[in-house]
Length: 165
Image (cartoon, rainbow, N blue to C red; front, side, top):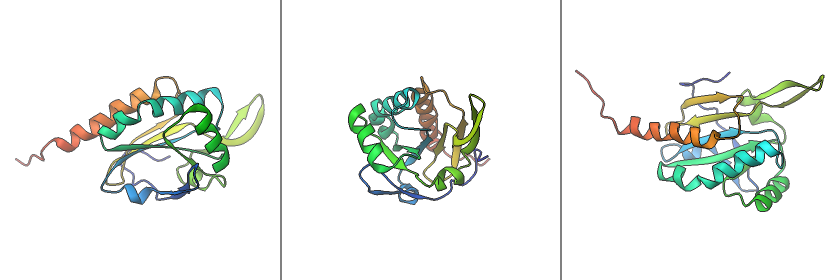
């Protein structure tokens, strides 16, 4: 599993408008909240996406962008975004390549049936491309607020002068 201190694996994925998001493009400019979720239009995923969207301006004040990733295709993301009034970018990982890269594509057991799926996870990546927080098996309710507190700490960490005594 990826952990705090690891370099975030680079990737490029299309969003709901079929525009490519490249993680490297954020380097030096933005922190990135990268969250993986199982499916559009499920109760937990909808709550999580809506919470991040509702607080997107607050994240932006801390030079942070929020992107969600699921195996859904771009058209499904567009419908989900439009139906729910979401503002954050939703990235399509249809082949689960990025989910595997971030080690969140895992075997799950649901009602006695084993199948592969996304482990709900969030990675807070700093401007230098380093994972500062890796959160696994997150609970959607209140998650955006908890992540925001961690993002605020990143900026205060960056504001502290280096002390060499």
